[in-house]
Every structure is written in structure tokens, then in C-alpha cells.
Length: 73
Image 1: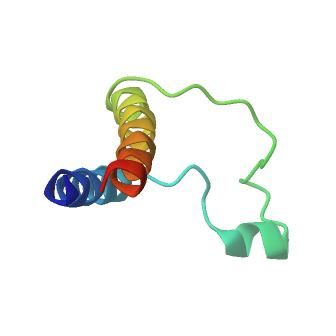
Image 2: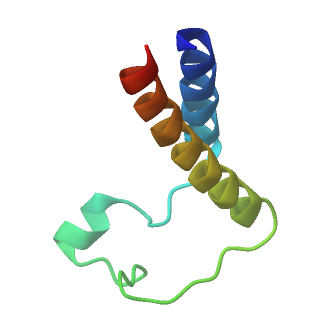
């Protein structure tokens, strides 16, 4: 059961690293960069949306497997 948890966590880390940043950087927020709008509503499309959904699903699976490992192992 622990091996499944390790595999899920590695896949979750890789998918998270594949996702692009949602902002232009923290330096623009500090210096007041004009091109950055923190509160703008942007929709994810294409591969960004797929990666976001996969991250959410794997996060839920990771959480459930962690609970199962804790209480069954």
C-alpha cells in the first residue's frame, strides 16, 4: 500500500511541476507592475485545464490513500 502512495505522490509532483505559473511573478506585485492584474478572471483552456483537473483528482486520491495507509497499515 505504501508503494502505491509513493507512486501517486511522485506523479502528483510531476504534474504540478508541468503546470505553468498563473501570474507573471511576485516581483510585479511588489513593484506594482502594470502588466499584471492579480484579480483578473482568466479561464484555463486546453492542456492547462487538463493538468489542473488531473492535479485535483490525484490530490484527492493521494489524500484518500494516505488515510487508508494510516488506518489500515
